[in-house]
Image 1 (spheres, one colour):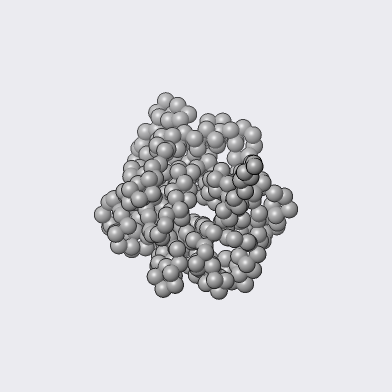
Image 2: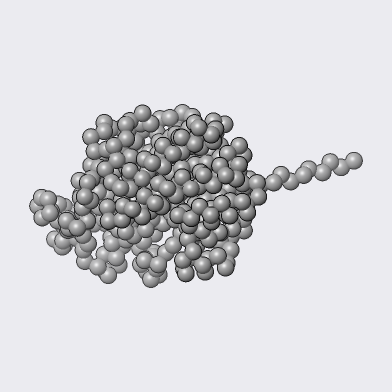
Length: 360
């Protein structure tokens, strides 16, 4: 008698913020692992178009709002056998949060509470694992480096204070209700899918425009800010691993190396064969092409944050020990991929049109 093996049902995951950089990479990782993936998108005119066409097999999009508990309950109740929720959605611009502190807090802080409360109302706490996207911005200006899971928080922006609410709300639902709820404290993670208003992608897109002869120079804010930069694809692998653990927990994901914005600029220009030399100080500092003597980078006060974390450097020792996670990308490889991708985007006329929503 022939033995027929029954095909196991795929795992089911729900991603808030699926159309962003992190959501798109995480979606691809889950699909590669055989998941059925559902994603939350805001009901804007642009995203309504995406709802009418499948991104790829195995992905279903749902229109909803992090500020609307009712819509979250409706969406989650419509997904059968949901096993994992990855909460990535939010207002992610630190500088913008100073201009929009109320909406940032409503979307980020209370939005997280709404997702967890929807899970509690629907009795998903025993069957569904929850991941909350934290940030290195939780740490303050004077925290010793490298920062670990034990380093105290001292947020210095409305974005970071909202993220601290998210973090402790996740811990509270874990402790009070027994949720399998985990936090990932992710240090800066970039990619060609990062929006062009973020400093790393601003640098690489502008360097690409210069390389293609379409621009002469660009402006930045604080060149001295130091960040621990990694690749979003590496970090989303770590995020997936966090929810595969038998017990919930909180983990830092970081590369363990840090570079200043100035060094990021230098590395980006090196990809196109340009050596940048610096002249002047403070707001008068400029980056000059050492061969042509053309000014390529200027400093503009308007790009400074109201308060700044000068140095963020993380230790992912716990993630490496418990999750077996290890980043694959070096800093140089990350910058090179971003610059070359942006050069291709400039040549195709899509430098400011790309969206990670196009997962195929």
